[in-house]
Amino acid sequence: MEATLLDFDLRDKEEYIINMGPQHPSTHGVLRFEVCLQGEQIKYLRPHCGYIHRGIEKMSEALTYPQLIHLTDRMDYLSAHINNEAVALCVENAMGVEVSDRVKYIRTILAELSRIASHQLWWCAFGMDLGALTTFFYGLRDREHILDIFEETTGSRLTQSFITPGGLMADVHPNFQKRIKEFITYFRKKLPEYDQLLTGNIIFRERTHGIGVMSKEVAIDYGVTGPSGRGSGFTCDIRKIAPYSAYPFVKFNEITLSEGDTYSRYVVRIKEMWESLNILEQLVDNIPQGPTMLELKAVKAPKGEYYQRVETARGELGVYIVSDGGPSPARIHYRTPNFSNLFVINKLAKGHKIADLVAISGSLDLVIPDIDR
Amino acid sequence: MQTEELITLITSLAPDQKPGISKQYPEFILPAEKLHEVAKTLKENPQTKMDYLFSLTASDRKDGLNVIYHLTSTEYPHTVVFRVILADKENPMVATVSDLWSGAEYLEREVFDLFGIKFENHPDLRRLFLDDEWVGYPLRKDYKDSFIFER
Image (tube, rainbow over all chains, first blue to last red; front, side):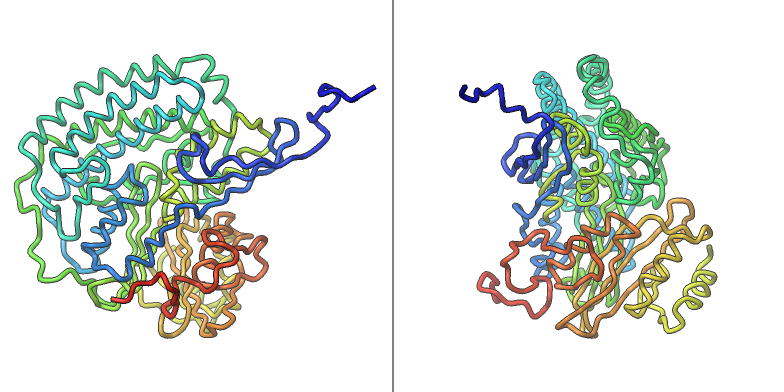
């Protein structure tokens, strides 16, 4: 008798390797997972990166500090303001200058708006990864309001390059405060819809509860920071550990959960949106008057080495500058959050089904250009 | 642990350490062969508990290739920076710390890829971003290829 298709039982006999990516919709960019499967179960997986490596660190060595700000937008493009702020703070610390309170407040407001916008995009894409297409429209509908605020003030919606060493590129638009207050009221009403649509959904819960459990020790060992690390109980919020800009002036809670599964990483981000709204509310009416740009003769870091840590929407961003005293750095290194968050994925996905890999990588909220730089 | 106590502890482990130039964090220049031992002690000592390696990178300086480690503790507020200077640019070699902090495995692969620094006992030392056939190490100052635009 001839062998039929039914005779080939792949379930537990043979290992095989498939490539997920580099053009897979749920990797959110050009990343390739080499996945070894036995049946549907993942035996191991190896991430391969470099598809969008542009050599930002090498390019920056030939640029002045105000110029290299523009490249930082292209790392984690959903936290562009925060990336700009990190370099600006590092250079300002090196020069020993301090910006006015007005600049600090505006920087923090922009950073928190970025954080909300980033979490909104993550939320809608995460729902879509798991098959809930409606979330995409809900998330983008609300993110549009923040992008409009950015567009009005900075002239750009995604790569703003607005925060620069010494202050801001320009003062904010007269509508800035009004639009933010409108947004806070609007989004306070809309955020419960997110919970109604996805958080309480039984299919969603089944697909996220107990999937990809990361213990606190593993999170620290791999340096997994941001909401992904806080979902495992790792208190790693730089806004609390080493406050910068206007964070010393505001009261907010660091959200941590101890379960460490995909669902708790999800809940941390939803709760962080509420916290960011609280921070915005405390700041928006109290922006002090003052200059928006320091009068600097030249932006040059004195000879030495400087490190600055900030909290982006995805975790800890570190900027390490080695300066010889010139207008451009001798070496600039970005310790990016996604780089460290990515490589824990082998540990999380091992033993799970291939479909769960999408949920796990979605819950780590990876932005690939930030890994490759 | 206070900075003075840290200095005493590290000096007792590596008597030929030198203070570094960083004013931000306490910095120590360690000989390459002492690095792993010091890092291991600082991680396992219950009074220091440096369990979080938040940055590992390198830079190409006049005195050689520098490897820089930023360490902190999740329990205590102290932070420390280690620097290893590898004067031999032909065959720079330092012991891996990926057995102490798993995240270091990939950070070291990145440094190997862009600087050509070899990490002894590393489980999987391959290029991370560039092709395996790529010639040279781009972040070194003497790196040249046809894509670089001379100003």
